[in-house]
Length: 203
Image (cartoon, rainbow, N blue to C red; front, side):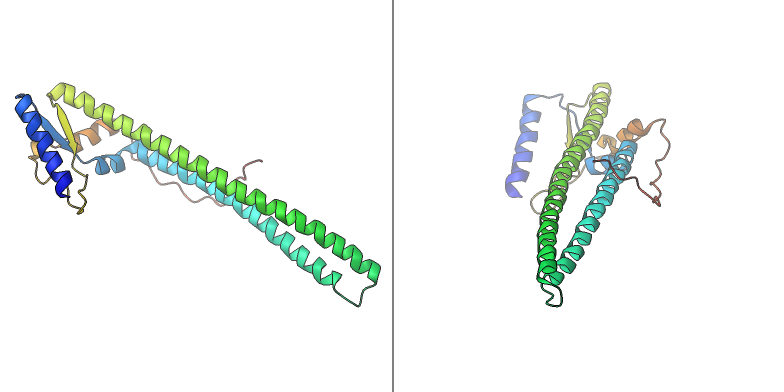
């Protein structure tokens, strides 16, 4: 915390010493991110996509569970001394075949979870970057009009969990203005209703 705080103070004093017209403002990036209408739209979209992944994962798991039960029946039959030797051999062969199918289905499930997990994470990061870009653009426009030369994130925390910005005059807090600028002309975004049936993605 001391290192972070001293670095911040040093930076501010350096700016003050080298530029007499430095005008500093703050913004609560966490709050702006949460209140931006596009954040809710993207969040809703990501939830729907995640639900699609869950549906297909359940389908694969159900298929794997069914194969496991079928394998158990065949395995038990292959060891049933009440059956003829030839019948037990056929059951053994069928059990081995079913085991290989189970192995393939398990690999399919694991690959699906791995690949979709990476895709979802990449999509989430891309959408987050898109929102942050919008916010930074709005801040830049605000600063160009009002003459601010530096904007600090008041939601940032030190290593001790304390806000890096201890105090700021409300006149230099851009949070509310930026939220209004970003949401101008937009209607409140509703949370999506839970659907009764979700289409399964085609493979």
